[in-house]
Length: 425
Image (cartoon, rainbow, N blue to C red; front, side, top):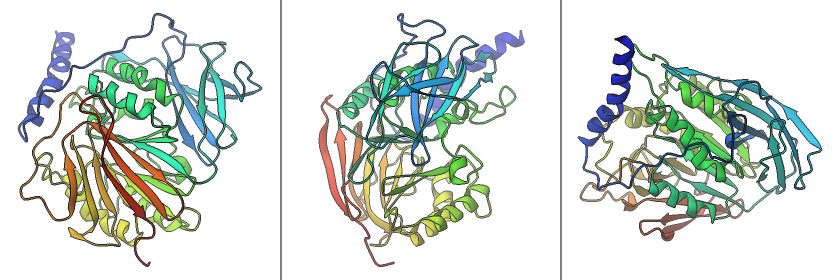
């Protein structure tokens, strides 16, 4: 009987979450959800859900899953197809989520690596399949793809297709990855869905509300699946949690914050952020970018009055302003919006530009209603699926562009040149 009750609760939970979220605003019909099973070309010992992430200045973490146990966490790699003169070993973990048992999760850090170089690699002791990735350049220019709230729908595949054609160097994802919402096989499906991109370029993520997956009585631990599957380089930045960290690439210092873990003054995350900001050398990394999930500025009617937004803003906005952060990217709201440089709800040339980019393709649809009249600090807003691209040209100039994909065509709908520094320190 208890077994039946567990299955009923797991079945009803996503429905309850969807009903709760629908009260705040009305969404247009979304496209159908998709589920990717293991390819017939692969077997239970084959590497799947391969993704890479940056570790330090010249290393890369290769992560993948096998259904069979006993496969070693080993990566062989080199700069020519079929030739792997280098190798590295790593760790293997797995997790349980109520009745679900994950596959074997492998993480191997390789390097040192040369910049702007294509590496070919194989996961485990097998000779196939062969994957490849390109390391970021040694200096400017560098290009980022930015997309939030991806999910697994036909819109998601359209967005990923457009990103794949953008010739980006690093992808940034401000939370809400798989929309598994406790349905663990959807995490496996998501890993397979993004693998064509995530195995070739670094995918750096932070968590959103859909990664929490905490259920009273049944599963009391938050972020179990996210932390097990999407290991980020938190230790290298002095963080004690995978939910917030920073990394540097070319001339950028990028901070990934956690909207759904403690952020108040005196919290571990707050103290870490203060220390991290104090360590930044703006001569080495003239650009400073921050990623959160819940937006601090938002003129959409969706997700108004949430503590994760106004509470975190109240706690940390002064820190970001004093550090002269250039851009703050957020997700959560399923639409696009760009604000001017802002501080304390007013235009301020020394404040960050705030951009909401939670329009990757999730199953909940778009947040189509905005506050009227439009606030003066909101420069551009539109409820369409799409992605963003940040082209950092040099130490003083970058171009941001938002690409709408409502008609399955990547159309540049908003663009701006950003200068750095925007004001005198």
